[in-house]
Length: 286
Image (cartoon, rainbow, N blue to C red; front, side, top):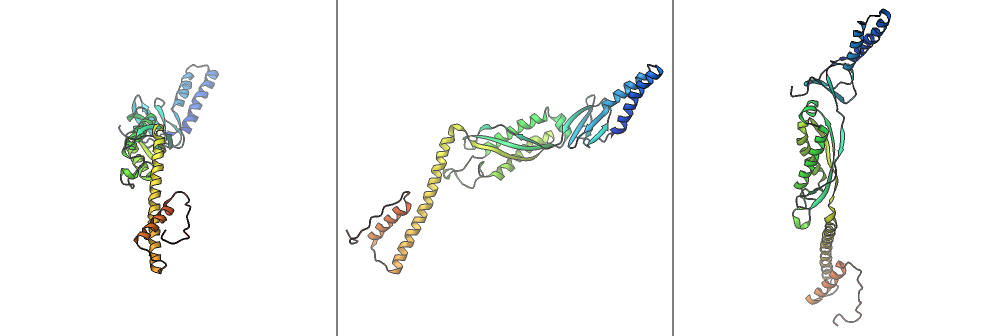
């Protein structure tokens, strides 16, 4: 037997009544008739009680007879099976696993701290019970291995000098990374009969030794991007100002005066501090 076999045992209510009848009936008969043979009924009444199993909702019992797999009881209720069966309980409920924060290197070699949140459940009790030693520990170890592999496949973040900003990153591409993580974990846990319901990154940050340096780099990148936008807007405004002046014939300026005006407007528009204008009350030519 190399796959799960769902077993439907007999109802346990009748056997419970039968066992209690044998046990207490044997005791009463021994005192009434003073015959030790009635002790056999007491023995069998007590022995048959070991065949009763209670299966709660979303639980299962794996049955073994002297090391041989006999089936799995998944239906909830009170049942009776062979008292010689070994009964191993395996939960079918969804379980959460929050991994420890691992220190790994991303695709660019930067040390990062990462952890994952996994939601999983057992779908094949045979594989969970016999194909791996401890399926719960197997989930923990394989999830950590999958997270380490995933972190090495993607960079933490993209900067302007590191390629296309549309590339998948651990920080910004949440859906893509979660799908890749779920696929990787599912491939590793399928041999244990476990289904991955959800896998996503629970914690993500640069390692402490480079966190300050990366923060300064992100700030510098943001400042450069902001300056780029400011310069684009300033050039557009200067071009519009010159065009309007020329269109409305407000003032005629040669190339030297246009250059001076462009220089002054660019300083005013691109400065990160308030400018103090100087009003020239004389002629245009000093």
